[in-house]
Image (cartoon, rainbow, N blue to C red; front, side, top):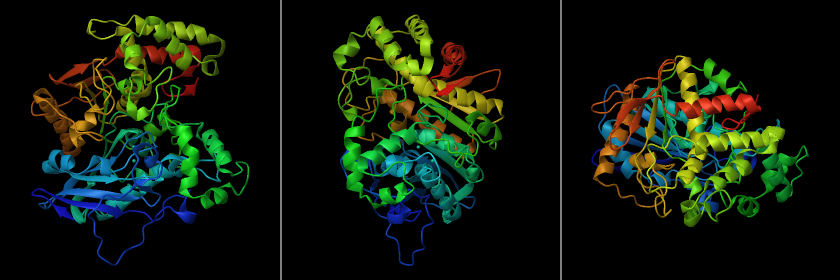
Length: 553
């Protein structure tokens, strides 16, 4: 345990048995009790596949969580933020998020923060598409941890009736069981657990909120820059991708003994096969991710997200996106390795991006015959013209308009439209639902000059956790924005309603989509991107396929 002036920190607490040997490609098993004192002083190593991109230690024995709590105890217990990292289901670890900013920004406000790890890549999501290897092990890990925390959090002065699940981008599931077991041991209130995630973590917590096994384990949901309704959050072709991996590693995909064969392989054999297949992190496709969960009829009983949302208990939900999410995939970015024709574009290409380039992108990535058949070219023309003719009164002439529209299309299809749809659907089904747009430009990577006005994917989370992969300098204007954003998140976790010192965010209703725009002048606004949402809601049925959520009509 490390104790600061205001926080106590417990690192590397196991919440499930190590998923190694016979437990590889199995749902997580309950962790065995230990009799000796656990020295909770070090962050756990990352889960396997993280090392392919990040170049530091990893292991299959990675199912651990960390607890950050206020030093003082209170009778009623503290609300809990249960956080799942992002990383496209391929990378992510808790050490990256550290402890200083968590303590300064959240624990100092009377919140217990739990950060958890789950299996990644094929170890978390390999599937044969049937009962042999059903998959979704990374989701089941999250659920196990949440159950565990519900059991123990009161011992940490936590209130398990106020648990908020939070995720960024693609991240929550079996970890939830563990959280519910333990959170009261930390003076936490297990009736106030908020599940939160960023990026892939947001997709995960959005899915977790629809799992019947999690219904009673949390009180609120906080998906940041990701949604279960995104086409990348669940992936029907993950079985095909898994079969290709099985063939490459020397296991017969058609065999009844494929699981035994894969269990016999060591991690280095998987890494050797995986590295050339996934080294670029994103694919040349609208569905950028290499691997993801799938709808299996088990983790979520319904195979229809809309139906699952209607059936789920009504929980306060605070959904948000950054204003130009896809900038991080569009511009030259060393994290995503080499440029290709459509993504990770060199700076000069981005500066000189033309209307022809925009149409070429729509044709090459969006308007594929496998989606639209003989209507493909008609679809390409309609989408290209819609974005090329977007109102540009907010366009700054120092930016390339067509490159901005390219980024906007990618942001819409991967983040904005799915998040808006989820928010509208939840509001219609009587969930208290709130929405934010984060619109302050922070340099979170080494991408070079800013070519798009707006905040890239990952910008908002910097305000909570600091720079994840490099130090971030926030100027005076940025500090003002940071305070507003942290207050919104903290007050939602504590009270169920996002607010700042001067603004209480109104909930969405079927008649009115009000949201908070977080920027230099943070303010409540309405009708967010209505023309673009209406466009994609109309064009899907017209052409028979919905690109944003990946389903056929």
